Image (cartoon, rainbow, N blue to C red; front, side, top):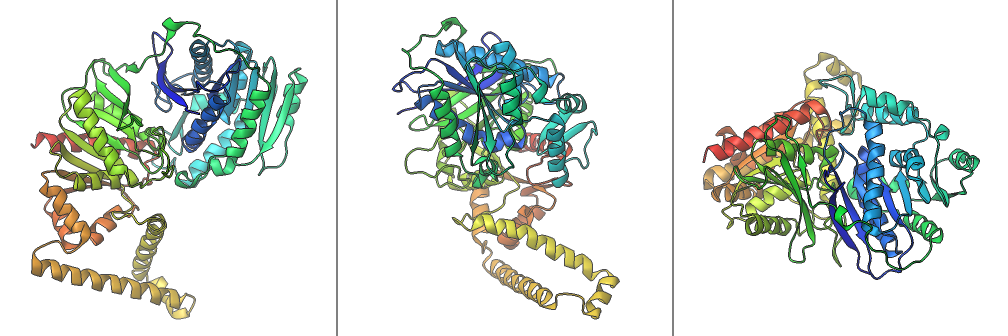
Length: 593
């Protein structure tokens, strides 16, 4: 069965929300439409792929489905620190339901929510009176949810060095004190809930059984089932390793199908209310609004991206391609790419944030691996994006940018697409490798950060007389220290030999050095942004050898270090430093030409 996925902005007339509408023309239609209410924060990013699979399976069962981003999250308009978030998000659920009903022609509706999305679906249900309500691991206690967010923030040190101590920052998810108080007061068991035909509570199989939500709904006269289904923890695992919970999705879809009826295909109830393919975002400085529009490109129109620009048409300064960071879809970690694109667009740069095939909403075709951060097709998909922007939007000058694996893709596209004179600048943010080796590189880059920490730790210890006393006392691991010293000695000797070779030959002696020479030889400038504690600078100077260090020293390569931040810039202050730094770097790169 072929699934149709339609990207759209809604509500009609004043679109501020972004979503995807999933249908399947060959499936026997059911008599309702589903609205999927996603979780938020890191759970939103980690579950994005699974929510797409859920909507696909609903469509295959004859149940058209709409998934969407709340205001201030994902691809929708607005910011997380605006006022009345809880109220606004419930309004968004209602808007999504109205859009889905208009598109499908079905007035009967099923709300499916995950975590805080389940809570929002339940809280909105008295207004919407859905036929069915599915709550997947709902947030029952807002107080407990806030504790979990704060624990996550503490684990990653997210609240350190922030500009505003009234904002909770957890994995790039921002919550103001007012919103925190609203969420903290949430007690779902006490809220009125409605579901005409019935409700389903989906519990995790890795937690102790709890039927409180099922009992609360049953006490309200709602016929309620509870299923304990596997896979939630795997769905929320590290992005490039997480697993779609197919068994849980199948259980949910089967329950919804069993509680609905087959019907004839329905016509749209309001064709005039068709959703838009673009959205206007008011400019904070009162200048012309920003436009965001959905784009399909590639040989089979299988690739997806969102183009952001000021005014009615992209123009002015060059266009910046934002390439997937790891396995995060085109919004970027903690919505970084959305914020960066809109900031750059306000300063005249067009921005195109894309999903390469197998990541996010560029759905993988047959025979390809899904969710791979370093796929072989990455550079080819980048070239396809450039060709699309040239042919469709008549754009002629580009910068390639990305974080993590996006830094790798941007760099290698800059090297390999050397015949494309439209690429003029490359920005590589926190690269974790310059040479991908299938099945090995991710582990190596994780170990490299630990190795750098150990080296720096022992260097600092060598300057501390108390550490020498401890060494003489015998209370240390001599074998480990000897092993580390020998490894570093071998590395330094190898580096020295490469340096001698470069001096004698007057050419780059390493593969990375040769790639740097090729990129700069194609008349492109190159910049790096590196977090403190990240291995990118070490990789650049060690693998690039004397040639890379010389380029940095002579300012042929720009390197900017950003202190007190993590790999994905999850805190607001260093994130804003990065965003403004990228803007200034782009301005310098293109004004100098």
